[in-house]
Image (cartoon, rainbow over the protein chains, first blue to last red):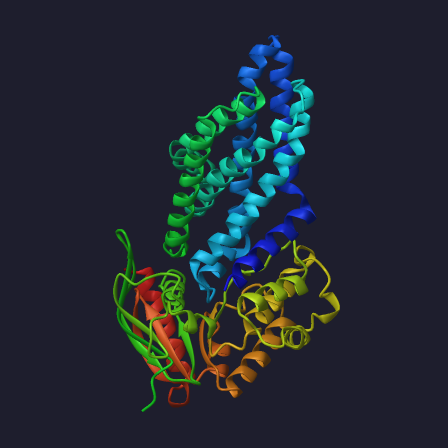
Length: 223
Length: 238
């Protein structure tokens, strides 16, 4: 049933592994953010713990924007967007394929950049940090589920990058803000009772964004 | 009489204030080879986009094999060859064709891929990235990609653009073969000679509507030329 989605995913990952274009650009961009913040602000460890979660998500989402833009720019090349509209498959399958490829690439990038973040900001690795995994997953899925469909909308326009930012930021802000809060709780080792309901809220938004995007994607592919 | 492969009734298309098509009506029988002639901006590509279901008409209706062009079954019967390649430069020819064979659920995919690559004489370059191909080779691979799933309806939007004489000859041979196989073919072109050589029927589109519809066998080549060039004159003197 998801034959087309898996084909699109495999194709995108094969192209990314071959060129490493997105992941490398995202990694360098994030590294730059960490270096600049680390050497510009001389702050205490306590203050650093306060700003670190926000900094981490700034790096994730700004780099993620690059990945999203890249995902459909690749399809625009040689008219492949039109080829997608001609495919004898449900638009939802195309959405799932693109969503999965962007999400996997972004999670891989996060896994690569997180150790650098730990080193730069001298954070202590602990067992509790594993709680970051569901936070990063939920936050990233929210960002990419909405970002994938909006990137498909924006790619038809001349100012693709500006339009994507304008459309995505207002809608994805709640997820990012909650993810920053959750990350802060984990990094400071203060996972309170508020943690799970907030994580659930991010998860609920993920489900809503994903379902709506899946249902609407057919209309996006039409001229 | 059997259901036509394609039936277009009163189709109009506008993009805001820009009119692309006006009340276009015609039908194409299964196995027919129809050439659509007209100058740039006459509405030929818009018409093919509507037929393929990529674009919806502002007015009128389109039926492919008696049903909606957006029907998934219909989309599997259709292929479009245009100036856009529908290929990924960062994949090899083989990887591109494997990708499309999975999307179109092609049976005996490897055998089919070998056949189409052989038909366009690209077997020896199948492991090379498409980005390293010349324009002509890429267009040949585009043809292979379009024929991969054995479409019943072939839409060709100026397919000869950018091809060298060898590639044009190859495409003409392939199209003749497709015609023999009973495929329905719609070709937009400026090349009156090729259109006359390949087609059963021609349509001249001018000022966004069909102005002439005739059988090649019943029309003097000069008449077709006259219809085409008079459309050009009309277009340049609105």
